[in-house]
Length: 325
Ligand code: GZL
Image 1: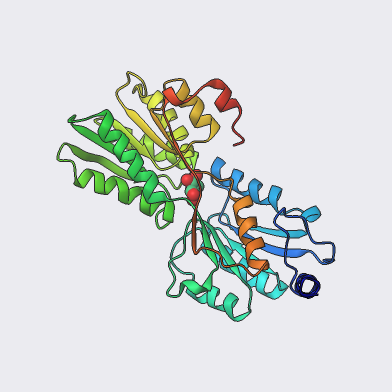
Image 2 (image 1 turned 45 degrees about the horizontal axis):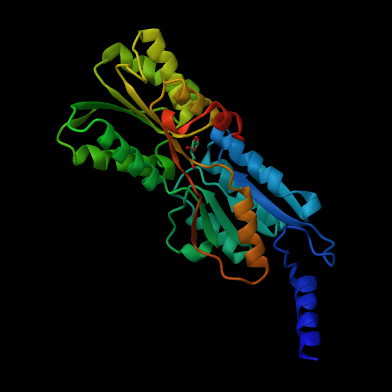
């Protein structure tokens, strides 16, 4: 008899609250789609495009979702407007991939007051009250930078290093923490110094532009620490035009973040020395958290995605060809 009532209670809660079954399939009792409002920060890089694709491929109608995607083109004001439109539309949950770390308190309080749950994905938000969001799914950006610094220390023990620091968009969590790791590294090594710190906004075009400008003034550096692959691709074009060698046996060691397949190919070809993976395929993990939430389970406030480092020795053409982004 007891089992009968527990089954009855489960069926009632699914029918009433739309809990989702872990395999992602919508319970038969559900008729309405679960509407996810997704505010994506932009489309500035290969990483970002893969991140968007991961969400689109995960939140499909046959699994019981309607995904509403708004691309903010790296402008926080566009994201705030998108979140407000999600409130008016009465979506069931918001996924926010924030362009910047600051400036979210007001609009996230509006979402909270509207009773709509929020998951932060990729970067982080710095708000006074972290109960404004359910969880932050993303990368350990400080860990990525620290692993890169440790690798550089091991590879160049005792050498005099002049490091050109190609930074991502200022104020984004990826830039803030990857930069902090390198700045801490320079501060703790008497034989390391900055040749320069320049911002490429995570794009190939800006990376090429600022690298070209920098090389007109200064070619005296032996490490390039570039905070994403697209800026690296632009920087490499500028290095080629300036006749400066890089990678295996070159004047400049290159460290790059994201580990897109194009960057891994450069690494395998000996043109880039270290690829630090930043995994954009976060849709499935976000969906798992949403299912836990809808089933009334507690979810962790911070979830880090598994990531690795790649040098030439870690790669084969088969591994590269098997990558999905
Ligand atoms: C990292 C992400 C960064 C990538 C860049 O999670 O925020 O933004 O490293 C992207 O490619 O532009």
